[in-house]
Picture 1: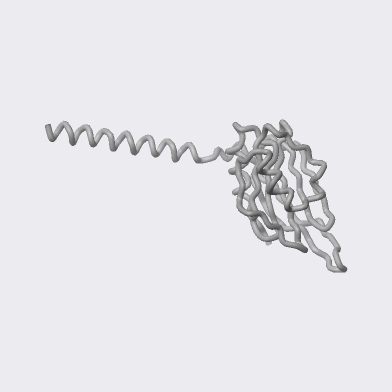
Picture 2: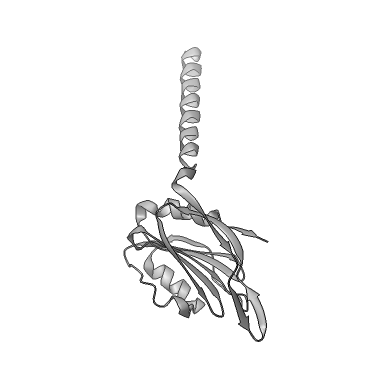
Length: 170
C-alpha cells in the first residue's frame, strides 16, 4: 500500500513539474514577432530659451507596425500605428512631471480615460479611441509615460510585452 502511495505521489509530482514548465514556456515571447524601433532623440524643443532634446530609447514592437509619427512642442510624443487602429504612444514631458496613480495594463476604455484625462495631454486629443478595446498606461519616470491604445483583447499580451522592452539610452 505504501509503495502504491509513493508511486502515485511521484507521478503527481512529475505531472505537476511538467505542467508548470509548460506554463513558464508559454510566458516566453517569440522575438521573431517583433522589430526594434529606435528613437534617436534628434527632435529638439525650445521652452523658456532652454533647448531640450527628446529622450533616446529603443523598444521592441509588433512587426505589424505601419507608421510612426513624432510630435514636438512642449512635450515629445511618438505615435506608433499598427494594424486595426492599435497604437503605442510614448510621451516625454521634460518641463513638468506626469502623474498617474499606478501602472494600468489591459484596462477598459472608461478606466483609461479616467486616468489619462488628469494628464492633460492636449496633443493626443485627436487620437481616436475605440471603446470596445483594451488600453494600458505605464509611468517609466516622472517625465515619461508609455501607453497602448485600441488593442484587441487577443493581442494584449504582445503589447504588454512590448512596453516592458523600452530601454533608455544615453
